[in-house]
Image: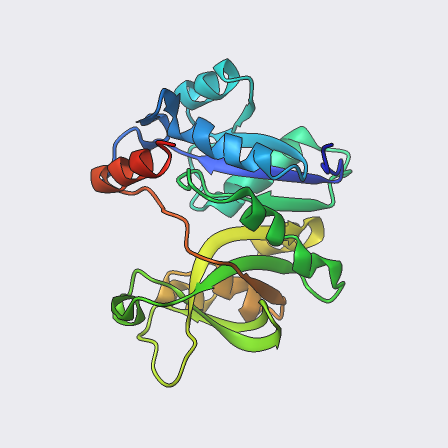
Length: 246
């Protein structure tokens, strides 16, 4: 039985402008374009309709061929959150949707359970945005600026109230947390967020979520079992093919 909720939707931003892996959303993984593999993971979460937001007619065609839904958005967006907000306004101008889950289009192996977990903090009316992180076990990640670290107050097992996100080295006793760029927004929070100007710390760290914290919005983090593979390079693509071979 589906647990889908008509007031929740999953939006997957997908653009073709990757430089390290040209045509990334259409890269083949076991007979399906990567964007369709992500679509399938999102559908498996059973939390609401799944829609791809893209600036590419080729991506739209691939999604529709696979039985999915895609909406065309501007090619000028600077971020995925801007793209999903345009898509939200297009598919739900009446404002019926209350919760939006933003799943990145390059996470073909993300567990459906982790997508579902992102909704848990929104049961608390004080939370504006929810996201995910996993405990860092690889010491190399502690000093890797490409690994974003989530910091905050652990509220209960598996949940943290975020105080900041940083690319800086993680120091001091752990555990330390690897942020996963999947977000669940209340509609009002997404609308407010995309209309705010970029903040200083956001620009310094190149982390969009700092804009929300800098403007007094609350982000809670669910701690999940591991970090899904983000596909950015040909090597990542081969790894994703191996992981999904079963």
